[in-house]
Amino acid sequence: MSDDFDPARVRPLFPALARRVGGHAALFLDAPGGTQAPQPVVDAVADYLAHVNANYGGVFATSRETSELVAQARAATAAFLNSPYPDGIVFGANMTTLTFAFSRALARTWRAGDEVVVTSLDHDANVASWMLAAEDRRATVRTLRCEADGALSVARLREVLSPRTRVVALTVASNAIGTIPDLAPLVRAAHDVGALVFLDAVHAAPHLPLDVLALECDALACSAYKFGGPHLGILWAQRGLLEQTAAYKVRPSPATGPGKWETGTQSFEAIAGLLAVLRYLGGLGADGGEALGRLALERAMQRIQRHELALTGRFLTGARTIPGLHVHGIADPARSAERTPTFGLTFDRITPQAACERLAARGVFAWAGNFYAIGLVEQLGLAGSGGLLRLGFAHYHDAADVDRALAELKALAG
Image 1: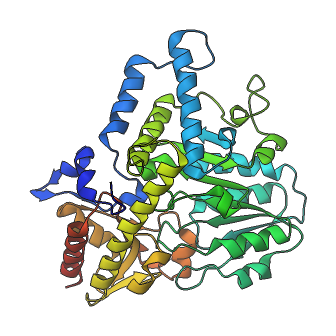
Image 2: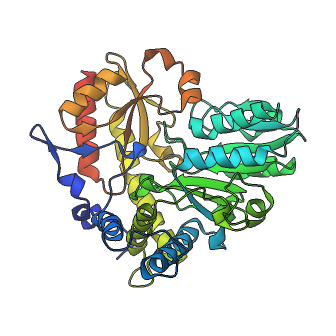
Image 3: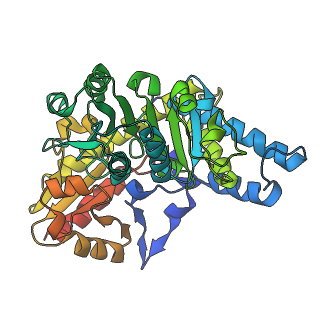
């Protein structure tokens, strides 16, 4: 495969893309809320339930197979995130559940007067979890407001940091308007005062190569269903942080390793689907080699990123020609590399909810509201007017999908 990604190669693997609604071909622009799954993922989940379906830790065949499946998935996820060790990977119900559990555990060492920093750009899973943990410990919450385009300023961050800051919670990419903040100076500033950095990579994972070493974060969370897998949460953290932090757990569960954090029986069928989607993604970059290695997964995500960059530029260029349509965040096609192909939109003449309903009737699936990015929608002044219309593209979309979306938006604006 060349370095040019061709969505025509993968579209037949996604059965959902053949769906029709009222005579219209379905256009799945709901990707920021969850992407469609390729057939290998569907098959892996069904095969696990049909032929394995056991708890792990036993000596019989299906239990041993489940244990091996979890080990393989942990290793593949570590490669996906460029973690140097698989035992830094924790599986759970979803990113929100994992973040609430992790924040509560970290907060056990906080004292009254300690501080945490959240942002107005983030999904509320990376805000409320830290706010509530701080409330339990009588710690102070400080909020870093984003810029008009969604950027996060290191100068503004330094204004809310102090030697009492314990955690700085940041997003790798906005789930509402797609902005990709420049994280490197923010992470350095947080570490300069001794704070831990927790990153929400849920929205970034389908669009960007993730590298926990390059990001220099202390912990990061994402969700498999945002990049073609089943509903499954993933938490990575520095090994020492996982080992040294006391987890809320049942007494017989392991005292070390990821099992210390994986409360209750895991969704092994979802873990089977995760392994399958990572194998699928790695296959886009393997070029005949090992699909589950770091090189293949990183190359695949780089190819996806370049393909989606072209979709982003095409959409932003077309959106400029539609009167009464407003793109929030980064709207300049020349800055397409600073954002994902997720667009938060408003119209002069129609509400986001009404736009969603009209699009749905024509087979275009989109979302309206705040998408749990309540701080951002409030900062934009849109909380009382229905929030945003959100359209999002994924790697299985092509130029024709962008053009159809633009045509539908033009009809709505008119």
